[in-house]
Amino acid sequence: MKGRILVTGGAGYIGSHTTVELQNAGYEVIIVDNLSNSKVEIIDGIEKITGIRPAFEQVDCVNKAVLTTVFKKYPDIKGIIHFAASKAVGESVHKPLLYYRNNLVSLLNLLELMPEYDVKGIVFSSSCTVYGQPERLPVDETAPIQPALSPYGNTKQINEEFIRDAIHAGASYKSIILRYFNPIGAHPSAEIGELPNGVPQNLVPFLTQTAIGIRKELSVFGNDYNTPDGSCIRDYINVVDLAKAHVVAIERMLENRSDEQLEYFNLGTGKGLSVLQLINSFEQATGVKVPHKIVGRREGDIEKIWANPRRANEVLGWTAKETIEDTLRSAWNWQLKLK
Ligand SMILES: NC(=O)c1ccc[n+]([C@@H]2O[C@H](COP(=O)([O-])OP(=O)(O)OC[C@H]3O[C@@H](n4cnc5c(N)ncnc54)[C@H](O)[C@@H]3O)[C@@H](O)[C@H]2O)c1
Image 1 (cartoon, rainbow, N blue to C red):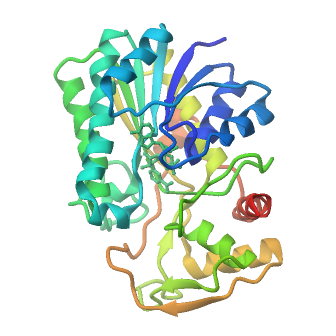
Image 2: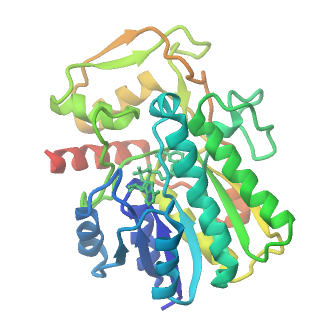
């Protein structure tokens, strides 16, 4: 066993896939999740894939007293991967204080507890939203941070500042901040995947729900952007590829492979795909048609963004490997399983 890792939000979409990869790599995982956006059955899925049932504590990271009991119950936690957060951009506009409380207090509690329990490092889930609409593409980690377009985006920026300032002030732990582009797909076993609550906010779950007939039609927001086919461009990253980057990051911190106390990495493929190209790729990969229509632009959408993942490729030795077709097929297989 390589050591204990606390995975907050580990019953969620990216957290569950990361737990699988951590267990496969020999780590002992303790999941803390309040199940506000996930289901406990996902823990069964993790066990089916890996043969190991991770420890699971149904705890709210905002509640410091209860969170402390987890550190007491599992001494010797070496590292934390902090996924737990509210993540719906649109909802955050209507419920900003809920987002600020959940996303900010959770991280504050962890950063305060880490030195007390001698935790060596924390990997933080950030997002390419911190770059806004970058002036230069592909975007690398040196691009300026732009004013956030939503309270959700703002929480990611403030969370990054919490970590930066705590380390600047002398905190002894290390941190790796991972800025994700657009995670999609599911585990190839179809035992775990994205479980959207209500109407999906993200393109791929909406697309698969439309393809299977739960939704009538997929709306493509805008075809008059300055892109080859007029629809927005994103960098879609396979969730298992993304999960593997967390294992590399945790190893890098715990094994002191870098002298830097704080590092930032973009996690993307380096390739941009338009919304219309994505729909087309899905239809090609699965043979299933997706009814869709063009509607007006959606407020707050960025025109185009894709990653320069060179730093992650060269420094972490991590590269996104899965093809878009395999990734979309995995999302479809997960949708079929959910049905
Ligand atoms: N999915 C994306 O497109 C994307 C992109 C960039 C960044 N991120 C970030 O990655 C992280 C994981 O995202 P995801 O897509 O897996 O989301 P998710 O909603 O599937 O997972 C988050 C998990 O955290 C739990 N949670 C929320 N608040 C909690 C709290 N206070 N205490 C304990 N558990 C709590 C939820 O129940 C859920 O299981 C989030 O921080 C998100 O902001 C996601």
